[in-house]
Length: 307
Image 1 (cartoon, rainbow, N blue to C red):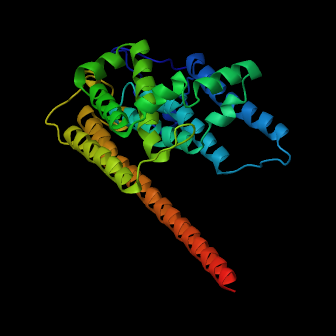
Image 2: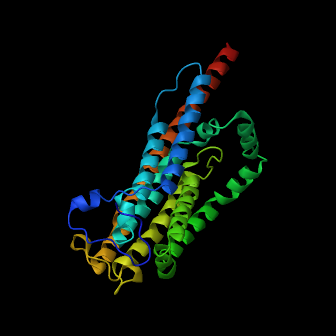
């Protein structure tokens, strides 16, 4: 069985797809938090259904949460994680799964209300109080999810971890590598909060400003991807001397990783912008319908009063 390798102890050279598919090595430090994450959601959902008069059924929220959890599992406990220490492009796939797939899907599931119901009543009340308008957790969330703060935290985290010294250091230390993933995922959750606005901090950012928010993130992602794609030499010393898995040399590996960040990463941002655009249109249609109904009600009232 393959084990997580650190430093410059690289994997045996992989030659076929079978080598990749056989490289499963999940560890308890990953599986236990993922199991807790899913377990809290399912237990809270079950308790809410027991209290409801009618079963809630499975909706988009459940699908979003399941998709986010699967993306986390793929990024942290699959062969992608095993080969991320040897291949830069695989490390970029891992980061895209954490930042552009898992984080927004979990936010779209709006999971906090269900997760709270997984706790005993006393704990649930204390957590609910902390998340109340005047509670300390609500105060922290209000500051860290403010659009400017959230965008800066995300951009700084992304650029710091792709600077050569921290990047190489993270690949040389198992603990630092785990901290890298934790901070990138946490920064991504904070980043997506002003766009999606799950409870308890609903986003009041107007849709045009959400477009600008995402576009600026898209722009800096293109810059970083272009730097990595067109670099004259190796940016990260860790990948020097890595076996050419599937015939991919270090130069091609770096270019492929930069292209993945550049093009698929850009397409993910454009997908988010498109979804946001249609959500904005739907919101405007609902508001127009409400205005029409209100106007009709006023006309009927005026007619009845005149009569």
